[in-house]
Each structure stands twice: as structure tokens, then as C-alpha cells.
Amino acid sequence: MAIVFDRPHALTDVPTHYCPGCTHGIIHRLVAEVMDELGIEGQTIGVAPVGCSVLAYNYFGCDMVEAPHGRAPAVATGLKRALPDRVVFSYQGDGDLAAIGTAETVHAATRGENITVIFVNNAIYGMTGGQMAPTTLPGQVTQTTPYGRDVKVAGNPIRVCEMLSTLDGVALAQRVSVDCVKNIQVAKKAIRKGFENQINKRGYSIIEVISSCPTNWGLTPVEALDWLRENMLPYYPLGVYKDTSEEAKGNE
Amino acid sequence: MKGNEALAEAAIQAGCRHFFGYPITPQTEVAAYMAKRMPKIGGTYLQAESEVAAINMVLGAASAGVRALTSSSSPGISLKTEGISYIAGSDLPCVIINVQRGGPGLGGIQPSQADYWQATRAPGHGDLHVLVFAPSTVQEMVDLVMDAFDMADLYRMPAMILADGALGQMMEPVEIKERPKRDLPEKTWAANGHENKRPHNIVNSLYLTPGDLEALVKERFERYDRIKSKEQRSESYMADDAEFIVVAYGASSRVCKSAVKAARAEGIKVGLIRPITLWPFPTDAIQEAAKTTKHFLTVEMSMGQMVDDVRLAVNGAAPVSFFGHTGGIIPSPAEVLGEIKKLAGGAK
Image (cartoon, rainbow over all chains, first blue to last red; front, side, top):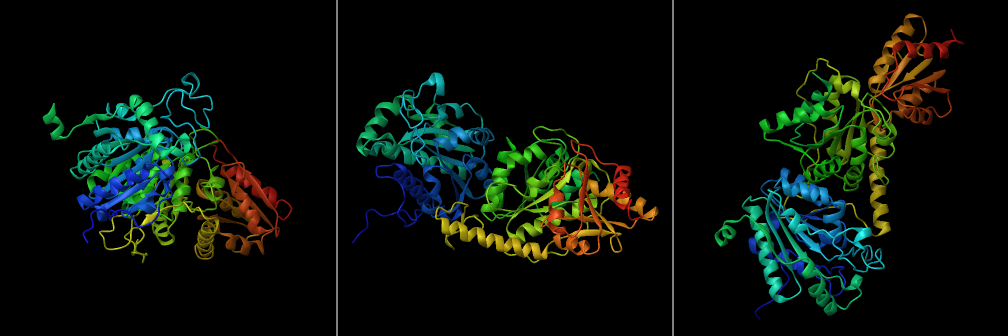
């Protein structure tokens, strides 16, 4: 019998701990499919963050390093400088990348560190049970913004791709979503480009994936995707914020 | 050669090609030297955005299996403690240099030994130790950096060089000798790309099952016990027939050596024990000396930190006094001689 759908080789054969309806599973799969397609699993080292995807080191088949909270870009920098011919990626959530690890993120980007960053933005701290994230929307209710995020008190959310696209070292800054098949296809293409950029030594690539958190948003998986489309996508518009590739230049 | 530059050159001679740092007085020459040398020998000098980032770059490079170094001074080491804990918890080797200055807080920029507790008691959160080496000459800075890399690899743990601003700025002649290569275990655990030839390696310090974490920490402490029994190092100076023993390390031990010599000239039977490893502390040498010593005197550039370990080693067998200055003041030989005379007052 012909196999038409299978687990990518670069995903290990273990059950994940992710909640039902969480989009981490889709994003893991896309990264693993790209590793398979490029044939780089044996040459790749992934860096896991602290947050919901802290256990990503068990799920990706490549070598993995678990970084302290927010420090994945620095850990990835150390790995890449030691192994310039290997492929190094970090997989980080919004709290990890845009709160505690902002300095590491901005400086890895501006150095043009030749790494690929998968940034999962679900506007909430999932692992600790649903507190405000740097990307929590104005008015959004979380455990630590029980009356909704009041920007006069808690400040405003960060739009990461917009911010990083101002930096010279960035080769690719693209925001994608995995809420529907069409967007998943765009997301995979962007992730693939992020890895290809690194192989072609083009510098820092970040792919921000707008993601859902049904558990901590208090919604069913389907409602969560509706909420994502209605609330997150207007605040975090999908698209390419910076792309220095030849192909992109051709489109200008 | 200047002490700080000697530290850097020794690391290069030890095969270190990856240095990650952040400027801070009084260790900046380490970074400046690396910035000059590394590009010429195909190595990496990278100025990080913070000490936090620098130690995590070390974590990444160490995970890849290469010899990695970072250098800082007291306030910067505080920032590195997060990374040091993760490095220890991931069983990674690396070397960290602390050229101590006065504290707490921003403190001062003059030499100090006030980070002894931090280095030997709490170099990061959790149950852990790092190897701590205390040079007292520029030559020893060279030798101990090389030893530190070997020992870190051998025991899969971080090693710290605990120097101070006086040693860092000091100029002395050094000889960098070719050393016999130590037989060190292969780094089969490194996350450097499995080439589809082995299962994937995971470098990690997270263990969510309490029993797993306890078992791992216990294994690490068995390793610490082996280190304590095999790797204690100290120098004894005029201590064989001594009735009084001064205990001091690093820059303050140089002052104490002069004071001991002067006291001997006056007929006082005094000697010096100079710890070279601070962790493991040379408990055995102190314990042995305690059998015949009437009184110990610990001299430090702090309010008295190592004196705790001296008291633990002496374990009540003899009184242990303390003399020191803090804030960046180095005790003078005359002051230490005065303290020795006070101890010997009754005996002479």
C-alpha cells in the first residue's frame, strides 16, 4: 500500500505534551518537513526555549540544546560560531523572545547572526498558565490582566517583525499564521526560506508564526482560530517585513 | 606580561578558540587581547550585548564541544550566575575568569577577594559546584588556566579562575611551556550534528520527575567527592616546623609571604598555607597542619569569607583568627606582621 502521509523523519516518534488544538504541533511538523526536504537533520542543531515548547528537544530528531529563558539567540550564536557549517535554529515563544530575551533577540538580529528563528506568538504565557505576554493584545484578559490589558498600566504589545525589520543584519522577517491550509502553506514556504537563507549564509531570518492557545484563551480549538483571525491578525498583519533575497529583489 | 593578557594567551595555548565577553574593569585587557589575537588564528572573539548573553554564548559553544571562555569582574559575574547554573546542570565544560573588584553592588574597581563565597558556595542557583583556581603570580595564571580547561573537560563542569585586580594588572615574566597532552574523554555528548550516524544528542538541565533530578544531582555530587579526594591543591611555605600558620590565597598571599619571612627573621615560627584550589578547598593540608599548629590566621581582601572553610577544616583543633581589608585595600606586610606578632606574643 502506498503511504501518502507520514511523520517527518526529523520528528521523533513520541507523543507531545501540547494541549488539544494547540498549533505548536503544526509548526513542529513544518520545521521537521523542511529539515527532511533540505536533507539537513544530521547537520542541524536546534535550540529549545523556556515556555510551552521547552520540551521541543524531545520532539525534533536533530541534536538539541535547551537554553535558559530568553537566551536561545545567545546559545544559538555560540553554537553557530563554533560550528559555522552546521544549521542552527532556535524555536521560541513570545515571552521568551520578546520579553526576557529581547536584548539577545535584537543583538543576534543586528549582528546578522546566520541562524534561523522560529517565533511562536500566541499572545499569552502558556506554560505557566496564561499570564500576560509582551504580545498580549490591548484589552485581552489573562490571569495577570484580569480586567483586560490596560495599556496605560501594562504598556503596549510589541510587533516583533516590524521592529526587527529596521535592522541591517536581518535577511528575512516574515509573519505567517497556521490557522488554515492556505496560510500553513505560506508558513512552510517562509520557514523553508529561513533555513535556505542560513545555508546560503545570508544572515538572520525570523519567521513569526501567529498561533492559538485554546486552553489559556478559554476557547475551543475552532473558536480559538476564529478569535485569532478576528483579533490577532488585525493587530499583527501577516506578510513579509523584510526580505533581502534575490527573488524578493526581483519583485520590487 | 600583564596578568590579564597572560590569562588570555594561556587560554589560546590551551586550545580555546571561542571567547565571549563584555567590557568591565579591571579585566578588560583579557577581551582586548582576545580581540587582537583571535582573528589571526581563526578563532572567535565576540563582544556580547551583556554578560548574560556572553555566558550563554559560552553555553552554546560548549554544547558544540569546543573549549569556550568568558571573562568578567565581580558585578559581571553576578550576571553570569544564571548561565553558570545551566552549564553545570547540563554537565558542560567551560572556563570563567573573575578578576575580582570591590563589592557589593557596583562597589569599586580596586582589587578584592570578596567573591569567595559566590565562587565556592553559590556560583548559581541549585546544588552545584564549579572548580575554583586561585593564582598568585602571573606565571600561575598561565598554568592554572591550562589546568582549568583540562579539569573542566575531565569532570564535565565549569571551572573558574578567581583572580583579582592586582594580579590582573601586574607585570611579571612568564614562560609558556609546551605541556604534555592529558588523556581526556571524547565529547560524545556534544550537540554538533548527528550526521544520521547516532541518536540525537540533547544538552539539557530540565528534569521534571523529582526522582530523575535527584539521581542526576547525586551522581554529580559523587563526582564532586572524587574531585575533593583527588584535586585539592595548596602550597606550604615555611610551614613544616611552624607553630603559627597564616592561610591566604591570591594577591593577599603574596603580602603574607613577605610578612612570614619577616616574622621568621625575628625568630617567630610561622608558616603559610596558600590554597591554590579554593573548590575543592585544601582541607586535608589544613587538617594535617592543625595537629601541630597553635593558632591559625586567615588573611583576605574581604570581611572574612575563606576563614569559614579554614575553621571547618581546623574543626576546633586550634583557634582561627582573621585579618583583612575590604573595599579595594590590600593589607600591607607590616600589618600582617603585626597580626602574627599578636598571635605569637604569648609564645615568644
